[in-house]
Amino acid sequence: MEYDEKLARFRQAHLNPFNKQRGARQHEQRAGEEAPDVASEATLPELAPGEPEFHCAERVMDLGLSEDHFSRPVLQQAIEECKQVILELPEQSERQKDAVVRLIHLRLKLQELKDPNEDEPNIRVLLEHRFYKEKSKSVKQTCDRCNTIIWGLIQTWYTCTGCYYRCHSKCLNLVSKPCVRSKVSHQAEYELSICPEAGLDSQDYRCAECRAPISLRGVPSEARQCDYTGQYYCSHCHWNDLAVIPARVVHNWDFEPRKVSRCSLRYLALMVSRPVLRLREINPLLFNYVEELVEIRKLRQDILLMKPYFITCKEAMEARLLLQLQDRQHFVENDEMYSVQDLLDAHTGRLGSSLTETHTLFAKHIKLDCERCQAKGFVCELCREGDVLFPFDSHTSVCSDCSAVFHRDCYYDNSTTCPKCARLMLRKQSLFQEPGPGVDA
View 1 (tube, one colour):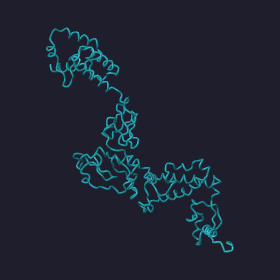
View 2: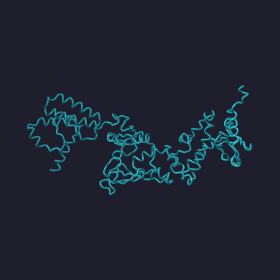
View 3: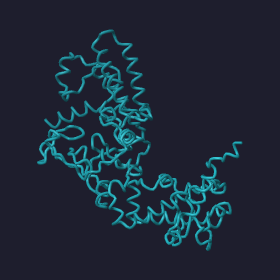
View 4: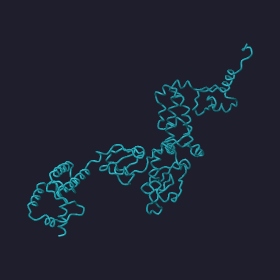
């Protein structure tokens, strides 16, 4: 008997909405019974807790709301029929109230089947985040807010175009972390102390970001240290992601990735190509131990000496030779600033080889291809022998005062003053020499 009652209760909750004729016949049988309503209610199996009970006589009222295979047209038709039934029933009657409840359930069911992409805006701005609705359905991502998987086929999700923060559409209004790009824009500098740990007590035993309670024993939540900031985070804010630490690179030339928090990971990713490291001020001894940096610094200095030739050469401007370094624009502005990406490429050897190719291309244009640039060369005024000299040649020396170019051996062997500097000095004296009395008369 217990099994029969459960089966009857299941059938009562899962009526087939497509068997309309059988529903109509059952309604006619129930209407033709002479037993009172109380007796019929007593014979029916008890409904499951929370399941609404409806007594509307129309067939649309028997539509099972627990079915998962409904299509939107079927539900929309049922909603329209339910509206018509409500208008036909007596005002303030129990049957009309039951029909209104059924209409609400039908609309909720239609809302569940509705494609979330229809009403969701494409762009949302929140806490300086600029969230863009993703259209990819096959890529499986993880929500940065709730730390669960984003199923692109059935869920709408957003990505911040600034810091690449990802979250579900339902988690969008729960985001409490400002966009990291705003920090990069206002505070573009690294923490250059190696893992500056202050202890959990300085954080009041709470996560440095979301302020959730944490401890080293894992109760109530595990405390995970970020090697970049030295602070401790909870498992929702620290996913054990790995990143190269700038402080360890500039002080120890150490490129081993270490565990960082999600916020630090995004910050380091946005800062990786920004030239904010002045190595000769931070660690001048680094150039004594890393040969790659010495070679790169010499190549950068030569490129800066080539730049005046290109900005005054029409052919070089048309060929856009300086755009060979557009990914590293700071290389044509100074020879002091480095980015973490520059140091990573220098460590792997990619930067040295690419700069050597660019240096060769620039020198070929100046010394071989362009007659205008060749005409701007120098002749050693100390020996007046040899080929035309250029300031970026390896065997030359440049006067720091007048920028004249000489052979290196001639420049250091001759202890006299630079001939060009002496000539300019005599010219200046002749211009400012006071005229004699005969000139006044």
